[in-house]
Length: 543
Image 1 (cartoon, helix red, strand yellow):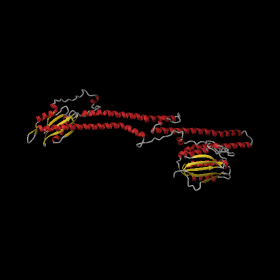
Image 2 (image 1 turned 90 degrees about the vertical axis):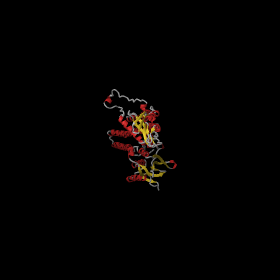
Image 3 (image 1 turned 180 degrees about the horizontal axis):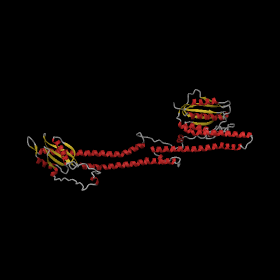
Image 4 (image 1 turned 30 degrees about the vertical axis):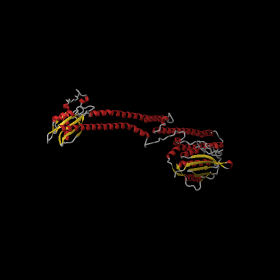
């Protein structure tokens, strides 16, 4: 009853564990609409929303203010043109040189003006003030008195809310004189200026023309501009409050959607680091369909893979300790018995046992070292296109060159007429698969027999077979042979020549390359077992 030297289940790599059926499924966030991050677009939109509300409100109110000012100018212009026309028709005397009757014009101005709505002034052709609606209405100029004693800041020459400088009387009169001067040239003037009280007023100056002669100027001004602007500013307060509310709400939302989940993930990672947990588990965050959910699922998959890796390492360490304990126990017993044995033949047998145990330990340590370095070698070497036929041919040629008389021969028989078969992988590990399979087949072949290595291409896959003429593998052990440290030696096989790791390493390498490795028996007539055969399947490299 013989079976191929076997090794354990392949030790999962980090990538394999993450892709395994037991690992959490990693769903990638689906980006729809505009390119970029969905969460990034949400952050940008929420922060811009409050600013947009404020900007839109300011633009609307600025447009409204300008419209109100323009409407006030139009209204004053209409009234001024009407008054100027009436004064031209009713208060003009003298031919052929017309002149304005100041007394009659004053009476007409008093009748036509509305002192409560605007201030009206009348200037003669020399720019001298003839009439003022404030005089006729007995209006008293009111000015706020300064406080009896200024605040500490004002006493020092500054204040937190500085007021605009009030123009002097000469500055106001000069501005008004320029405005009247423009009108005396026959052109209408309309705009804004400051009054002697510091208020902004909308002013219109209309020339009183008789044919082409300018007899005087009618000036109308409205001082309710500051009230309008103050009202507009009060109207802007709701927009400001809305913008502040949106900004605060967006900040709280971003804190809830981003900051707190990231903090939870950081704390979960700390628990894993401090060995209080084997894996991160945040199911409520993993259900989210955004970048935070994607990150959570990736972290869960990563830590799950690390947990499986740790379990595999612990299991591997326990198996190593068990396998090393057997030869060490045998060595100890042989050493303790050696001094008590005086028979030369018995001493020779004990020395042979010691030699075999030492060889077994050496083989175990070598294979354990290779198995522990395998993951690092697979992650360090970059895959490249490999001519599988050339690789197998070189390995078989080395066996043939080093064979001694009576050794089991190795023959390579690729499929006839087949072109070069290439695979994507790492040459060193792939060569190790072939060598392990050949060594395993030679250990179960009769002396002087031969091991056959074949290769063919089937539906885009490269298939390598290694066959021997040994006793075969019991059907119940076709999978067991790939378990770690499993070995079943035929009669006469050298003790300690197999560690039970060769086939486990071979399957692990095949899995890392996206392939498979299986064992089966070759049968002949009447189902007689002719030997064992291992079949390696690897995906062929894309052309």
